[in-house]
Image (cartoon, rainbow over all chains, first blue to last red; front, side):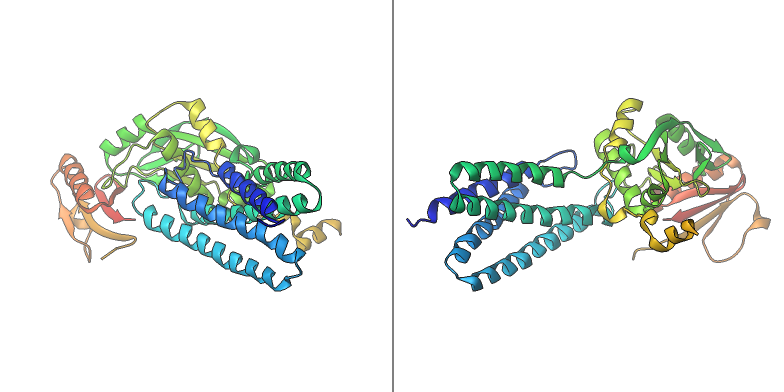
Length: 297
Length: 61
């Protein structure tokens, strides 16, 4: 037992707790039950330990020990690769695929969560050593709150208006409102689509959002989440029954065509609304300096 | 072999309208056309698209 034992244990415990809080299995079903969770809890434990150990190292003037953190960074970049590879492999067997942008988003969040855990461990141990255990608890709780705030990004419902719309055929062309979706040749398929399909129109709230929701990865993420939550009326070998999202070129509205098994408009709206806005899809043309310069003249 | 975006078959009731590379299936009636198209669609994992009343293509997406 040394003077640092309790601070380190404290940092590790709170770091791991913060990982547990951030590790939620939801409709995305990822990480998968038990095995996936164990992997991430172990990595969270390692991250917390690294963060906690860095403090005593600095206190003892062992500054080179901080290089250990670079090992941590490499380690967590590997976590990101691992997530990306696993999800990409599995994606080809999904009825409605997640898409690369969504996978990248998930992989990035796994990496960043480990860093948050590391900071929690670091600050917890630091405040324990500098002040006392009560101050450390307060700091750790603040870290947990900040961590969960950082973790939750915005949702689709924050950036668009969602309206239900009717689907119709003009000859072989399938339309949601006035947005062309695809060409369906067979009468039998048309009947199935009219019977089981649902249409929604997403109207962007401003110019930035037009580009963000135009992103193909973001659109695929919407389709995937809707299919996971509401089920999907399709099987392998029926590519005509594919949920699709197309864009109105005039005003950037999206026409969402889905084939849910639970055909409840309110539920479908809330599912579409709670799809996360993917970090790599976000665009901010309004922040462009050259664009704004033109306005001032 | 994975094919992307290619026409796997052409199905028609009008012999005058088609010729060329993809396999072509001639049918006697609209009913037969629908039947053949839905079968080929299921077999090839393609989608039957209608170019006109009497001309369907099966496309692999």
